[in-house]
Image (cartoon, rainbow, N blue to C red):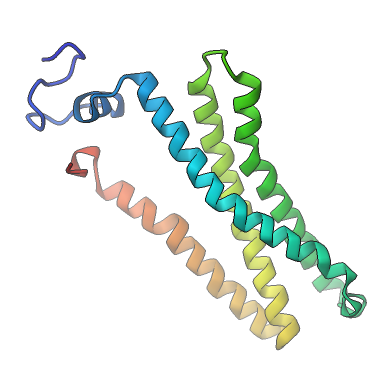
Length: 181
């Protein structure tokens, strides 16, 4: 055993916890791990926030278009659900910045990272809903309702596979020891 409590030989045993793995394989302290996690999360949120901002911009101009008054009640409801999902995504995807600012220099980075992770997951879920709604709305306006529904189902399936099923599959079938450096 080394001074950190992990194995002194890299790869000689599989660390029992994530913290042990980070200490053994990365040589990280808990604080270094939190700093890395925070940095990774903020970088990921930067990418997602840009897309959400563009989506909201596009959605906000829709009611000011002349054809908006001709939309059916169902399409107006879909529009509002889509808009509120996009706004909700923005709230959750920007929330980690607020958490960090409010808890800055309070030695609460563990709380900030945990809360930011949950906010990011909620924001990504709402972004998926907003993108599905926007797809259904546009395809329905361009073609017909049945095509819009089909497009929505296809996009929802893509999101489920790419954003949820594939990562959960890899998470279930791998261990930190599988990550060879």
